[in-house]
Length: 177
Image (cartoon, rainbow, N blue to C red; front, side, top):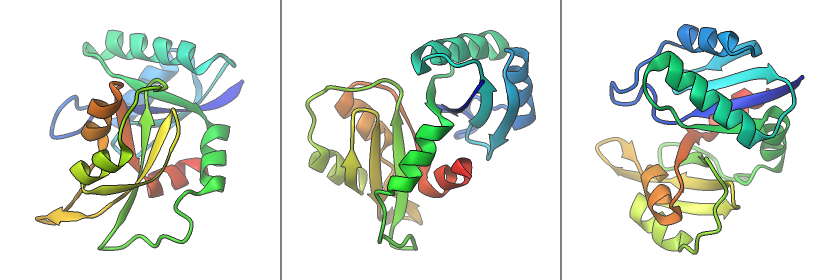
């Protein structure tokens, strides 16, 4: 069995697609996964499963969640080892998070080969891109007013033509431990 992380897109956001984490854990266990643990309300699930490719596991999760919840939930799947390597490589090294900057990582739900302008995405989202690859974008987000920070998810989806889900870097750090 291998350790995986599922990042669910768009649940418990703005009172939409609400699900309690205890219920989400139960759904994962019903699908046959082991050692299921959730982290915060944004739909982060660490679990054990028989070793399969991430795309195969993604399809199984999305189908099972749709059957259990009655609505579509898109999922980004990574191995826990991939998350730990990401944390170890730390693209944010030397950047201190505070009131003037927040750190985010966008998980693309499928790899992209789209031609896009990282600089244009950054400007449109009130963010700055530190690093990107076909599966992830690492952002610094800045205050945009009313106590809010630039949030790059929708801008990234539009530019790359793939669905994505974004997490605060501190969430990723806690999941990796």
